[in-house]
Length: 84
Length: 209
Image 1: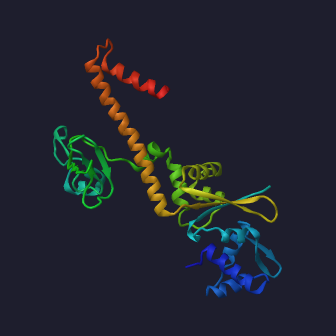
Image 2: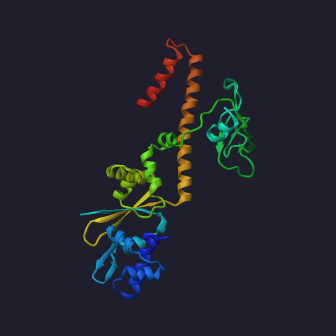
């Protein structure tokens, strides 16, 4: 079973906090013992939660704010990106 | 109706099994809810749980109502949600579809439900106003913001929807009580119009006010 978007995000943020460097989808997949999480990373990028860099992904301010919400992962239902 | 057909239609369990429905009564003894009446003041209450085996009214045990003489139509969940909460099927679809699917964008949700994205956004906001969803706003690095829709605690949702429904049922019970009082007034008064005209005039005046 594929890891959820939220699990991938939490794992990537943990790895980013440990190293301070952008994290590759491969590193997240290895940490979750899963073959690939590239689709989840692309989806998280679409929700404006990850920023792609040349060396991988870094969590955005939005991602940090999302994880700081006092909400269970399963309860986050819809993310609506609104431009200025 | 055969026994097999009855088994396939559990919603009909509210109805009497007697063939002559004009003389039927509905058994309330095995329902998950209970209705109690006070034999002293005619108070009637509905409970979803019996606390310590029953209810009391002015410190006296109430009598559990075992049968209903009226033939009750089984409620349709869509109609109940629409009547009590003003929540149409599309709103419920949005609520049910988002639970367990993980974060989706409004356009992804619209695609799954085959609704217009505007409709999905409208119901997301209505579900927030209604209290079934909560909305938080997060900042974006490039400007703008991200709206996060998340569900409320399930226990809280259960209690809120039940209280909301009871409030609606209380309003409905008040209307029924008023209808009965209208009949009583008519019998005691000297009206030139028929009861049906007096009856509807009174309720229309209430709706207008």
